[in-house]
Image (cartoon, rainbow, N blue to C red; front, side, top):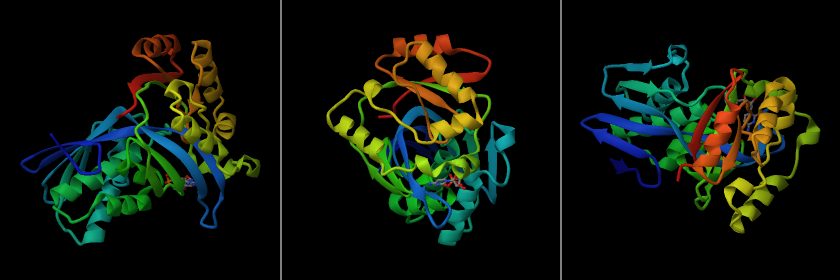
Length: 295
Ligand code: C5P
């Protein structure tokens, strides 16, 4: 195992076979400042990477090819293949690669699994093809693929602004146990943003409040978590409200939705209380996953 400078991800590399871990993220805060002329929204968010991760491997091949253990994701438009083609275009590199993707992160979940896979692909292919691209350049390239991609070059904790491309790594937040609850029903990010009322826009005070709490050393499981998108998302998928209620019923003190949903989560000081809640939450309406912060 070796470690890429400036990247907290373990990279396993032996004889042209490179393996990278692609972590999930949660939003500890998510403020929307307003709608931009380009149609995107200006946001202010604190993102935290999780131990829950997909695994991406690359090996030399005559052309670009993706093998994924989830057949429904193994198509030409997968962000991983789009990342590979973008890297080829940006560098003029004509080499191919066989990309092997093992999925664990639920999709359409607000956990940025696709974006994290894309970031991992950029990183792994840069190594495989021996390209002179550093993390910063890859993050800029990644922003073309999706707003969440640049964060994954600045893990485990970061303040994210702009459309998602302005990322400032934060001091590592102390460890917390996380229970994720992913309802069967997903939420379309584009639709959700298009339905967001102007009254939801703010100056980013909730993220400011969270930054202050982090500065004061407030433990993660008592942090003032927030998500501006939660109310509109719950209108689209009422199951989100039921999942939050289930968390509170199970004794969680700070359940919230991550990103554009539909996953909700709560933070816990120890594995035992996380497991007790996870077991209480078990239901056919959603998938429950227990994990921790990536440190
Ligand atoms: O960039 P990404 O493909 O992840 O965004 C999906 C959709 O979410 C965009 O098409 C846009 O409608 C919305 N979005 C937004 N503002 C952002 C990020 C995403 O409006 N900062």
